[in-house]
Image (cartoon, rainbow, N blue to C red; front, side, top):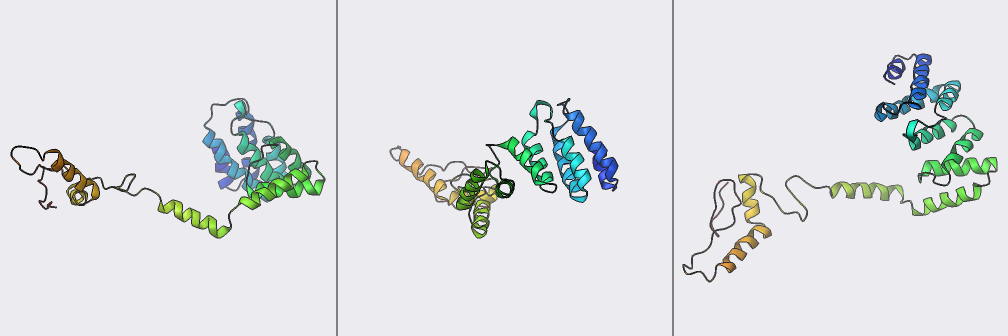
Length: 223
């Protein structure tokens, strides 16, 4: 696979195609190569297939049989679907049938499947159209998808905070923030209540929140 990537970068299409064919053939018998190497090679396959129909047909044939232990099987079928969409409808139908009835719930795949099944008169054409309609009904509009992505990013945890958005002191500069937070005030108040019946009557010390010493309640924390 590394040789195929090198030849592809050098623009030596035929040698890159041959290296991919040999690599995929070996991966059908030997499951030990790193899957990431094979997965990264799929991008090269798509690039080569987009430039030459004959090369696309050769690479589709190289990916026709499952790899050892069915490794990367879904990825292999998806790449074959992408290649077939550049070749002919009959090839696309034969590959899509291998994924039935658990076709990936993705808009582009469902659209191509419905269009190809309808154009070829496939028995599952009505099912494909119905499932595409179900997907489109539940799919948020583009603006909503962008908003959801922004909300997800805004909910990401920030450094120095935990669930509940309470500060955890990481140094003297944060000790003051913890002291004046609801959590810090609660700690002093609870300590006062617990020791209200003590003989000395002196105000108790706060919980240790700085890295250096304990400070009494009401005393301003120094930076």
